[in-house]
Amino acid sequence: MAKENFADKLVAAVKKKGNPICVGLDPRLNQIPKVIINRALVGKDKSPTQAAAYAIIEFNKGIIDAVADIVPVVKPQIAFYEIYGAEGVRAYEETLKYAKSKGLLTIADAKRNDIGSTAQAYAKSFLGEVEIFEDENEVVMPIFDADSVTINPYLGWDGIKPFIDEAEKYGKGMFILVKTSNNSSGDLQDLEMANGMAFYEMVGHLVDSWGADLVGESGYNSVGAVVGATYPEQAKKLRKIMPNSIFLVPGYGAQGGGAADVAPCFNKDGLGAIVNSSRGIIFAYERLGFDPNAYAEAAQAAVLEMKNDLATIF
Amino acid sequence: MAKENFADKLVAAVKKKGNPICVGLDPRLNQIPKVIINRALVGKDKSPTQAAAYAIIEFNKGIIDAVADIVPVVKPQIAFYEIYGAEGVRAYEETLKYAKSKGLLTIADAKRNDIGSTAQAYAKSFLGEVEIFEDENEVVMPIFDADSVTINPYLGWDGIKPFIDEAEKYGKGMFILVKTSNNSSGDLQDLEMANGMAFYEMVGHLVDSWGADLVGESGYNSVGAVVGATYPEQAKKLRKIMPNSIFLVPGYGAQGGGAADVAPCFNKDGLGAIVNSSRGIIFAYERLGFDPNAYAEAAQAAVLEMKNDLATIF
Image 1: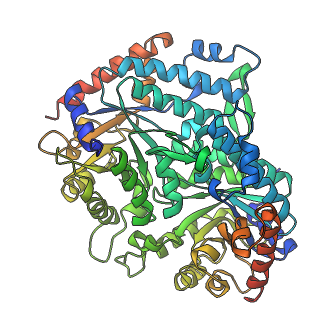
Image 2: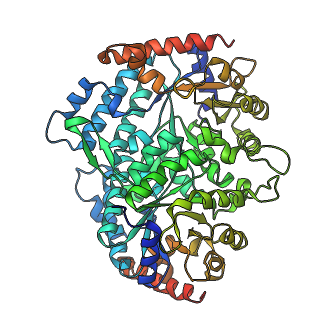
Image 3: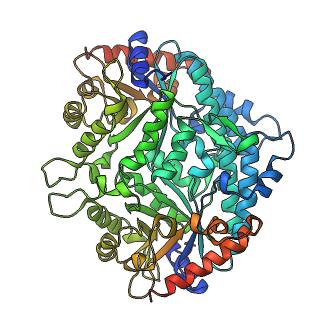
């Protein structure tokens, strides 16, 4: 039996929760409340990276518990876990697992990319299942088991295809970098092509074609695109180029984008985009003047504030 | 005191060993000799991913011991480790550490990329040191401690800068994807620009400018480029565009490239490129008809065969 299409699941979750908010789980130890850090440091048998992983998991669980009933999806950025090596990656696995157990959809923000045979290894670990050993010793198990993953398109189709295959098999999806939110995203992405388009527009056309086989009943396809909130003019063009792709929109909040900036990422049906905020939500206790111990309540308040802000679009 | 420049270290190692070979450590469990797998499976207390990590580490140590005196550099591809989650990443850390202890330079083939603040997390974990906790609890430690890392340029300068900073501080380097070895690398990389260049040529010019501050006494800079052996015509153009960059050349051997194909990647001084082979060396026992238990000797034979082949270039 074919698994339910990822885009359909995401659209359903957005409708159910009544907002398109993605909470970015980008933990930074120096902003995690001291009381959690102190608990993590108790016990001499923990290595520094184990203690870091402990703090991250406890912090993330607090955030996830606070937002699980409100938002449809969370996005842990793997760089902030991998920075603590194997122990950090364990915290990443646990974060994805915990978010799933609370009914949230997940985006593994990993921006992975490689040639076909290597991309297949990434696709299996992030989206599918991994076969370990052979014959009578074989074990088949999920590793990260995210609902979707971010991918860099620089290597072209054969670096994308393995992710499409796993997405089809397991009802998963992906978001391919098209126009990123950072200041220098134009260095490559805005270069002018011989046909008059900007490079990011060409990539948009490719992403649209790559997703054609994964269109769900919602009309959206499971091959989404990363389109930064910081470039609304470009988003407007991309919305036309990729009518069926769901945009993952970073750059709201801490990076400077507001509701008006993300508006062009949506279709007329009010769907077609999810808007990520990381620091603006998870460390909202600093911005909103909450006690650090009430960081989860602050995150909840920030999510509700963002929900109200985004509601002004429609 | 400034650390020794990475490009200088790499050039010196190539001269000392008398060849530009990079051994790709891309372990695949189903090709690791059964005797190692069986040892890994002993003991009921190991999880499947722990057993996989055990097999990978033992296999890699055998390869590293066999090639350490012959080649200048090794390149573990992180996808084949990350596929086993946290335990696989632990095997990755151990592989890098063991290679370093045997005097080899290392390339972490991770193709990482992200916006500035996130790229900084990757740069610290792969090339620099990571500060864990603050004040009296602070610990500063290396995590992956590779000599260099592969990077995807799609996000432009502010995704590269953090790697440059760590490279300068710690005497490390990087290889930025320019023209990759896979079949569909042209989907984006060969697109024609308004100025008549191909996209990969524009990226080559950017990489050349990005590396300008990290030129060593050898005349080479620590910002290298990934240029596939499978595209010799393009390599010829890129050699002119980036005269001071060291090319990391994948695609030799299993992917189809030979000595004639990699020749255009070298400068007239016989330097300027390192040529990677992964499957063709580490699983040479299959191709050369060695007993699986002699996989390390087979790898040694394959390296010497490759050394002779590459010597025909000069």
